Length: 437
Image (cartoon, rainbow, N blue to C red; front, side, top):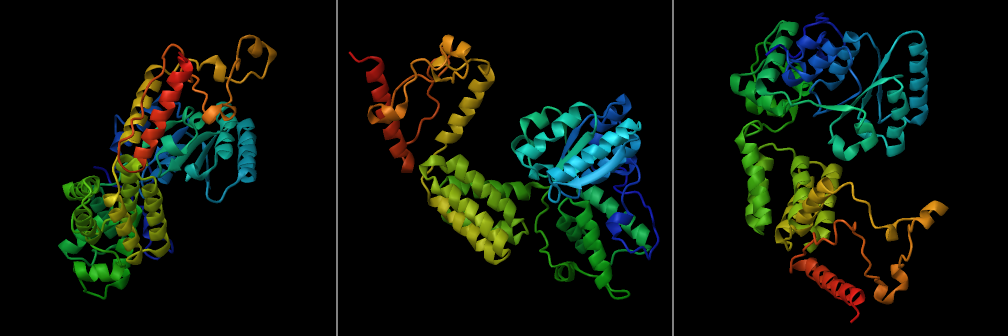
């Protein structure tokens, strides 16, 4: 594996952080992303083709997204402009676009790197479309969130998603070795403490270098830290298991299945083990949210609200106080009635949409804003449900070629028992009104 960062600007008295001093100076110096930058990597092929196109970089912090974007601009002879969705608004973007147009007239293209691109709202994201389409900018947007959920479909259709992986232990170790070369001294850590530091970095190269700097600052001449001393200095818990190995996945699976199986005691036990192992509490909180929507669903709609509130409470309180909020959510989820009916219905709907996505809805429920559409029968004989007996018309909303389907089948537990009764009542009314005899 190539080094994660090339040694550059090695002056020991440089005022900027170690991570900046060790920033890669070429794409070949970036490690941990061989699927993108190796000989057969996706980005390597794009550069060779001479057409980069707009891209979305999706991956965790500290995996090289900003650095790769900067180096791509150098490789493709584009002017590099960087902005952040946290600090930029429409006015700032218009100025960036205007400057890019000026460069284009002078024969210079622009690579616009937008950090945290998912934080732009829908209108702001749409503002990129014209300048992407006419070639004014080549957009590279970076996000830690799933682009499928956070970015507009129109933006995603014009950009290719590149996934950045967390750095493995070998890549982090290479980075630490380069840092030692840069500093001209070894890290003041015994072998176990060094392994703990690698795990504390959690695949984040920038975090690894920050931790190394903290260790160097704290060490007295000739002092070597063990794991306990390292933990005291950097104020991070030492992971008991390596997150790259099976312990991480085994425990979160055990927690999830204990909640699904309505065993709050076992769920609390696995929660405590994960927290004691140094697991990110927000990762656990996100999984509890998933449990609420996947395994409880509408059997107890309040479970999702409790899970979201626990995540927010941890954000507000931090550790250790905020961990109790997550424990409360775990207990609530484990003791709630269970149903995966909504989960199964949505998956079934997705399959139908994929297989029959071109079918037109029945004209009766379509608006008719023009005379031609009214003449074609759009909206004709539509029954406004609020004017009907029981607030229910019973008309068909499905494409005629597909016919009515039943996707959502609520269970007879919790709140879904009430939903099933409502659906049965409406099915009975629908049958009566379609066949009054």
